[in-house]
Length: 234
Image 1 (tube, rainbow, N blue to C red):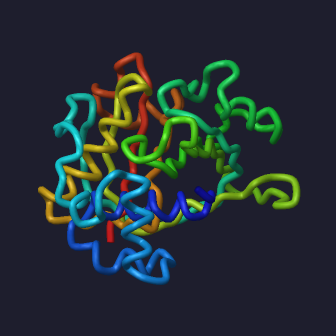
Image 2 (cartoon, helix red, strand yellow):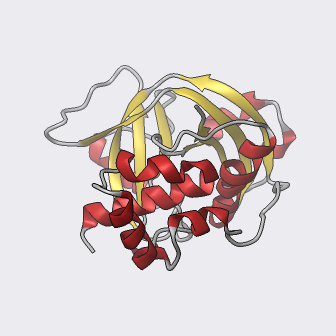
């Protein structure tokens, strides 16, 4: 299967998980010439027709984790980040502030410190491990530096789109963050009659030690990974 076709089919599966009514429009919007061609390709990739896939229950309901706090709808400004691409599952990520993490390596390359108050650490999640094979998952470790522009010929510049998001505050192991994303994407949004925007990827902003004092919540003092998870809404 070609790379572009795989991405289109995985995007289709993602949209069908988000909205069962998306079956009719998904094929043409994702560039398939006919609905029949889309259905054949989709069945070959996921073992089911788009309609049956959209109606199926996909695994367990994760529920709200007690490590996810203060979910609310917010509007955030867009920001440009310098990024490094990581492939593979999210489970083995080394978080910012730990030696050899992709953020620390990127900061060294840029000549900045993660303790600098102008520096923010983000993670951009392009793929859902419920859909994409683990080895093919794409994740961008990103740094933004307030007031600084970087040469796009030397560095990969990735925009984090501004707009409306559901934001949840996470305090726990990085390996368990995926369940928090799934809860926000597939459960919280439906319960709160919100619609996830499938054209913008979700992301996380890691909270550094210099940030924690001003947050005013004891939940942040968990001695583990602290982050804000952002899921895009229409």
